[in-house]
Figure 1 (cartoon, helix red, strand yellow):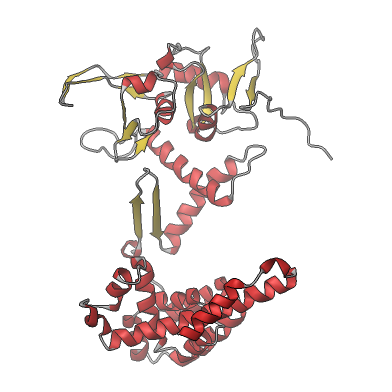
Figure 2 (figure 1 turned 45 degrees about the horizontal axis):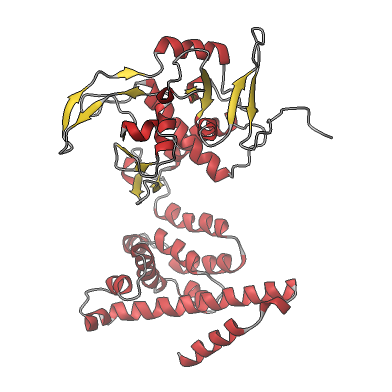
Amino acid sequence: MSEIRSAVDALAAEDLHGLTNGQTLERTAALVQLANRVAAELTRTVRHGELTQAAEHDGLKSMRSWLIGHARLAPNDASKLVRSGRVLEHFPAVATGFADGEVTAAQVDLVADAVRPADVARAQEQDVDLGAFDRDWATIAAGASHDVLKVAVQRFADALDPDGPEPDPTEGRRLSIAKHADGSVTGRFELDAVGGEKVEAAIESIVQANRPKGDERTRAQQNADALVQLCDNQLASGHLPTLRTVKPHVIVTVDVEDLVDPATGPDAARTGFGATLSAARARWVACDSTVTRLVLGPDGLPLDVGRTHRVVPPHLRKAVEQRDGHCVFAGCGAPTHWCDVHHLVEWVNDGETSLDNSALLCERHHTKVHHGFRVARDDGAPPGHRWRTWRPDGTEILIGPLLP
């Protein structure tokens, strides 16, 4: 181990600025292979520790718990490491490729995720030749892309169940959502082929319908925006099941002082599911919303609940939709049912809830307008006048013919 540490120290001390591009790539390839070999040896050692119950030496019941507590690995990474060690016992060719640095830890995890202990038992019962899969996977992993290996690994599941899964796919569906300290969320989902096709089709329809000129979003950002838009459409439709006698909706609680204060005001508002929002973000939500006034006592308990009223009444929204037809931000044509009614002068700043003070904006561009961009209609223009859009620096976004 001391020799390995010394070798890594020597690598870290090398000056990379003198390398040519070719030398940089050669060094990268060599380090990837070395990292694979180290990962293989770590996997082998963890498996040995599991078989010998080495974690008991430190008073822990499993190598997974030891990796989490002593090596500070994330629980998911610790599970992958333990699982990979178990599955490699059944696939010696893949294990050899891993030890030689030709197979990556991610590729081994792909195999481990597809071949659980119960699957190994089923393969033995059905006389499925694990050795053939082992040799094929080792060859593919060493010479093809990760996606090709995915297809090859799927062949194992096909061999165990040639007819495919049962008609009811719901048992295999999973969706987990984690909320972080800043209110943002991350998630992971697993769907059957048909369920996944439905999700992809729905998201793709919105992605393809919302491609404004100059859009610089990545594909992942477009997909995420489309998912939020799907939920927004459903919430706005009023057709979702009720939650505790009321239709599901986005709840934001904010002090009236923060709502009318033009400052950003971090952590000024709280959502129904516990996220915190800035005052600026709360004002963005309030543009097209239903408002209920609550008077709180010194102990924070409600003393009075005022009447709920909708900021933009239905008849005004219909008029704005009829006039604007789509999102009015330059280059965007998002349909009306994707849009909020934005107050050009915010209603919390005494802006009128009127047709002249309203503009139809999709979620993305509604956010832009609340962060420095500006939209306005031509003053004194006749019916059919157009909307104009300005950047935060005051320059106008102009849509003209494409240059050759």
